[in-house]
Length: 305
Image (cartoon, rainbow, N blue to C red; front, top):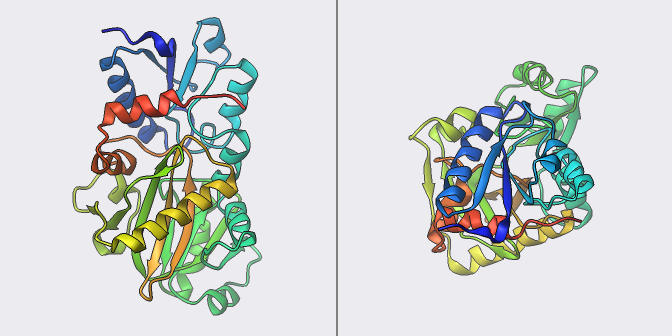
């Protein structure tokens, strides 16, 4: 049965970022779900077609299934604003800010929200001083990449420079973050509602690109197993973290719950994965929402401004 209330919908997928392959998986899953629900949806790859064609081809809405730079960083959102095509997820400012892990942490810290201590790395960095300040292990990652691209867990001081050299291949701006030992959690949200938390147990505690998307050895616990009162407090923290960044529609915050029960916000994802291994659909399912229903709810919230 046709579902005409959304008009003609472009599912933006692929793109030019380092996360292109994941975006293709996400976008094709969303496209299949929308088509199955009767939506007049079509895949649109900005790496192959210029975005201005969206207006020429009569698209009424855009579902953004792009990940990383050129899709999740406010640039596509800005173009869609100019074209006056409503789109899913956060607006220009929140998308750009959330993609920048450094400035996200500065906003959170300024608002009194907990996040690990950090240092910005460059070729002139005093590596020993960073280790002395942050301790070991240290997590090194590009500021403007997602999906753990170019990220390294440094366990020895002699590894820090090499970790920076890897990260700088992806981004000129690289951040080193103190490593908080504890439970790794992720917290999706949909509109103004936090979805159930997911506890992640990756092989060797290494939740890297391979263990995120291409292994069945990573364990995802949802429900998380945390006491209800504690989970509710963490969900409230996540919604506050999204609010101060200006996020809307949907997204996912990653955090660590330390051994002594203190939460630390790591980063915000404004266009999370929607693949077979993805976390937002997993959490939504526990909340009673199937994949197609989730896609329709995200699409229904598409807007400008």
